[in-house]
Image 1 (cartoon, each protein chain N blue to C red):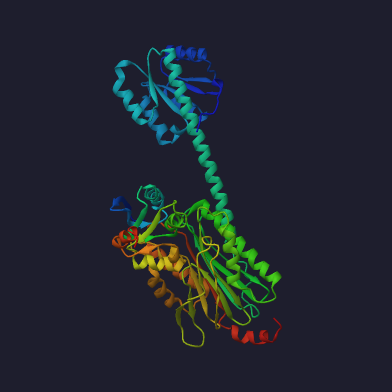
Image 2: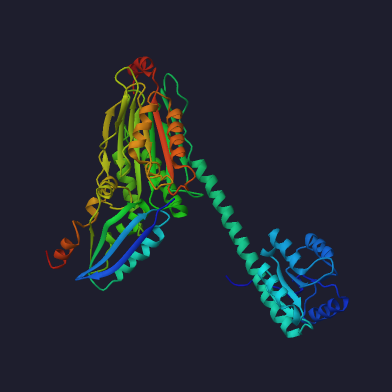
Length: 413
Length: 116
C-alpha cells in the first residue's frame, strides 16, 4: 500500500498550547512550510470541542494546558477510538521526558522539543500525515471488503432458497433445510425444486475449503447441476438420471481446475407419483431415511449410488441407485460440518449422535427434524467457534400421501 | 475450538518424511500447504506423509494433498503411510482412496524406495 498523493493545504492541523506565543510561532512555521488549514486552541476544553466539530489529521499537543494535561486529552481520544485517523505530536520541553513518554504510551506518534525547530517540524509532520493517510486508506479498503462480503453473503443467502410448491394432495412433499456458514460466506449449499409437475430434484453439496473461492465454486456447481437437469428434461423423454447429471457436471468442473477444488454432492430425484427416489452420491456423507409410516418405524442409511467427489478426475464413473419410499418416509441429508463439529473438550458430534438424535425425531415434519437436530448440535457445541459450514436438508413424503396418490397413478406421466 | 496441528519434516534413509500430528481443518489448513511444499522441495525423491498421529483432516486439507498426489514433481513418488481407519473411511467416502499411494508404514515405504 502506498501513500496517496496529497496537498499540504488539505492537511488539517490543530495546535493546542496554553502559551499564545508558542502557538503563534508554530503557526507561522507551519505556514512557511506550506500548511494552510491550521486552527488553534488555548486549553483542553477548547481543544476537545474543536476535535468534536472537525476532522483533523494532526494534533500538536502541549503537555500542560492548565485545565487538562496533554495525557488526559490523549486518553480521552484513545478511549473514543479517535487515534485511528488522527496523529498526535507532543510539544514538550527537555525537562518533561517522563510525561512525554507517558503520552507516547497513550498513543502519541512522536514529540517535538520547544523551541520547535522548523526542519524537525517538517520531518515529523510528514511522517505523521503519511501514517494517518495510510491508516485511513487501510480502513477504507477494509470497509470496502466488508461491504463486498456482506453483499456476497446476501447473494448467497438468496441462492439458498428452495422453490418447492407447498405440500398438497397432488404434490405430497414437505421440505426444510438450513445452512450455517462458518465464515461470512461459505462453500456448503443446498437446493430443491420441482420439475415436470411430479418430480422433485434436491441436492446438498460441500466444497473443499472456505471463504470466497469456495463460495464461487459452490455457485458454479449449483448452476451447472440445475443446467444439466434442465438439459435432461428438454432432451430426454425419460426420467432424470442423477448419475448422468453428475457425470456432466464433473467433466465441466474438472476443466481448468488446477487448484483441484472439489465438491461432494448428493443429488436426488424423487417422483411424487411413484414415490421412487433415484440418487447419486458424489463423495458426500451417506444420508439417512427416517421411516414413520404404517409399517415398522426406524432409521436407516441411504447406502450406495456412490461415486467420486466432483472436480478431481474427469473420467470418473457415476451410477445412480433407485429405492422405493413410502408415505411418511423422510430423507435427511447433511454435510460433515454437522458430524465434525467439536465441543469444548475437542470431541466431535459424530455420526452416532446424529443417529441417536434422528431416531428420536422420527415422525416429525421436516422442519421439526432439521430444527431438532440443529438444536441438539448447538447444545453440544456450546460456545466453541464453528470451523466448518453446517448444512441439513430434510424431505418427507406426506404421511397421508397414499390415498391421494391412487388417482395420480391413473394419470399419464 | 480447533485443535493444534504440528508437523515435522526430516530425512530417514532414502526417504523424505513429513509427519502430521493433530487436526488439519479450515483453521489449521493454512500451515499444512507450506509443509507439503517443503516436503515436495526436499532433495529425496521418495516422499512419505506419515499420518500415524493425524487425528482429523477436513476437505480443505485433502485438497493440497490431492494436488501433490495428482501432479507430483517429475521423478518423485509420494506415499501415505500409517493412515488411521477413520481417515481411510473418509478417503473411501469422498472416492479418493485410489488416488493416493498408501502403504502400511515407513518400513514399507523404505522397501518401495529400494525398488520393492
